[in-house]
Image (cartoon, rainbow, N blue to C red; front, side):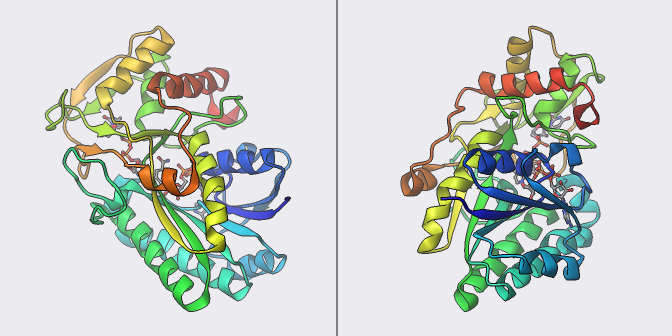
Length: 329
Ligand SMILES: NC(=O)c1ccc[n+]([C@@H]2O[C@H](COP(=O)([O-])OP(=O)(O)OC[C@H]3O[C@@H](n4cnc5c(N)ncnc54)[C@H](O)[C@@H]3O)[C@@H](O)[C@H]2O)c1
Ligand SMILES: O=c1ccn([C@@H]2O[C@H](COP(=O)(O)OP(=O)(O)O[C@H]3O[C@H](CO)[C@H](O)[C@H](O)[C@H]3O)[C@@H](O)[C@H]2O)c(=O)[nH]1
């Protein structure tokens, strides 16, 4: 059945892949995005685009009044952990405050379903254990906290107004659309995989590896790289559950890869050496963050298709090679 969906942040990295997945499934999609960090060219043909900021409540009201919307997918956010530690109130307002405004507007306009981009940054260090939904939440950054408060607001929006929601706590989103229709172009880029790829392609100086003395097998941090297309499919998979209840899921592959393993994978897939040098630890980095995706797999039947880091790297590399200047091409 064809549904009408509103996607905030649909001009960004994860959001644009979600829009592709929704269009591929035959749905009607409207993107609402300020282009603060996103790109107009990232919005796929076939989606309607509204340039607007979540802070513009009259515009948001107008868009939501043009319903009915079968679900609102909320990706729009600021997401630089380091920046959030310098400007915590900016993050609380941009992610928390504007998130509350959007939820409130959804309730007023009778939206019944809401899917929220939450994050593994809700968790501090869990040692070498897989992080499941019972792992205590301990945000190590203002960014993580600004996502936590939206999860809490959604709990109350369900309890009081019956707005059903899915909080999907992504681990490290990585890779690009396997058909090359969308990619990753953050400015500035702070994420490991695109930085390593650009170092291999000679497009930037040597990568600085933040810390070699973590209590991990090779001394570098370990993360769970979930392919962005698998993430988009997870959003589709949770929708039927929202007929009955609100849910919170950790979304990852269940497998960890160290930063050095990411460097090695890029060298293997690209056939080029990655110039890198060791640097100090980056403040706020937990040594290891790996999801247990058991709950979302059990409750929805979703499972990640990209379980081999090489394949995830391959899709990211292909997009970067095809788009040397990202969306500026
Ligand atoms: N990339 C990851 O690894 C990762 C991991 C966990 C969670 N997340 C979350 O997933 C979501 C998407 O992340 P991303 O990497 O695609 O980020 P992104 O910066 O590429 O996309 C965010 C989009 O939201 C838009 N936006 C920001 N503030 C807005 C506002 N006030 N009004 C309207 N539009 C606004 C931006 O222009 C951009 O297009 C974010 O909520 C992020 O916190 C990302
Ligand atoms: O130049 C760099 C960049 C990163 N790293 C390291 O690479 C690992 C991954 O770092 P990323 O910045 O790519 O990703 P994070 O794990 O810090 O954070 C990402 O995932 C989080 C959830 O885990 C948040 O949601 C956040 O928005 C998203 O950027 C970390 O150990 C980091 O220190 C380097 O060594 N050098």
